[in-house]
Amino acid sequence: MTEVYTADQVLPVGAPPLRQGAVAVQDGLIVAVGSRPEVLGAFPDAQLEELGAAVLLPALINAHTHLEYATYGGFGDGLPFGDWLADHVARRPRLAPGDVEAAAALGALLCLQSGVGTVADASYSGAAVAAASEAGLRAIVHLEAFGGPDADAEGVVAALRARLATFAGEATPLVRLGVSPHSPYSVAPAVFAALDTFAQSDSLTVMTHVAESAAELEAVAAGTGPIADALRSLTRIEATGQHSLDLLAGAGLLHPGVILVHAVHVNAGQIAVIAASGAGVVHCPRSNAILGCGAAPIAGLRAAGVPIGIGSDSPASAIDFDFWAELRAALLTARVREGRPDALTADAVLELATLGGARVLGIDGLVGSLAVGKRADLTAVDLTDTPYGVAENAATAAVFAGSPERTLLTVVDGVVRYRKGADTERLAACWAAALPGRTRMIGTDD
Ligand SMILES: [Zn+2]
Image (tube, rainbow, N blue to C red):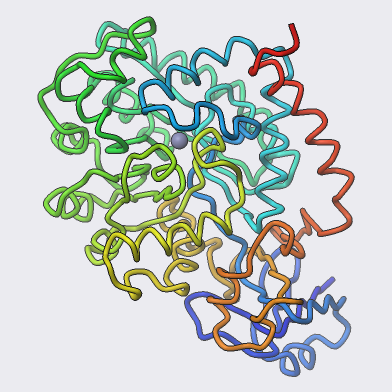
């Protein structure tokens, strides 16, 4: 069976946009991308989906999520980083069995509703594995690991290995597992190194939060400050005298397959070190703005050739999983930081949110653009009742008009996993299942 999707504007990414374009899909694989008459002529018996006044583009790649925090929006808003982290840690024990799973299921569906076909998740509980699998999302779920300077590094690795084996049974072929040493402040250098060695031996990607906040830099260098205070009951933090990024680089922990989330506080020399290492960066502009962490030097990282993706992080810091809002934030943040409108164009933002993210995750041979031979992961933004229905630039149209409400469908591996209208009740059911956990975290039900 062949399906053909047509739209007024097709944005393949990595190839020029097409007016009145079409994409043909067979068995989950893209078999043609071209003009509408050309593709329909080649596949006259195909099942046709006409999207009309829309931009059809590769499904977006949200390169850093925490699906299980889907209901945390607004928690601790306005608190300094250390207090915000302490608030997050304090609320978690109030959750009841099933709350985390319900939130992760909601998070997976909200990502699909936002045009996202792939997520790279960092998961404390592992609930994202089942959530992504059941939703049909493509995912790499990195199980989080922690361990201070007093931890037994090999013991942390053994525990993680056992958890990976448990969750592997819940994963569909679209869902892979990875390792997430949480951050250089919550994972001591020896533990980090042991986790990295294990990940490399098992060809797993490594995701870590690094150079995010001034508080992190103080915790890692001096073992003091708001993060050390917030985590005192959980772990000791040892002074290393180093910047987080230099610490990882010096220990040989930057290499291909390592995903550096945030990289806000990095200078030109450190950008050059990242570029030379082959590690990738995930930019989370809304999270960084809301927590007052700063604005990552995306223009500099791009100029150095670092693979870069965009991530929403979790609603705990970034409000929600509206990835279109994240893309606009990336564009605005870069232009504010650099003081020039060409610091990040809409075309560049969409490239980061598709092919760029795929490169960071090492799956750019599989997804990230509409190209013959790639898996059929695609989405479409409705341009009806917007200025952008009158075509000028397809990327500007998608970035400026995109929203969960305007996402017509999201296809993953050739299967429609979200469709506007058809999934209204499913969304409502996911919200209804997940919100009692939020009520418990707020603490008004007792
Ligand atoms: Zn995060």
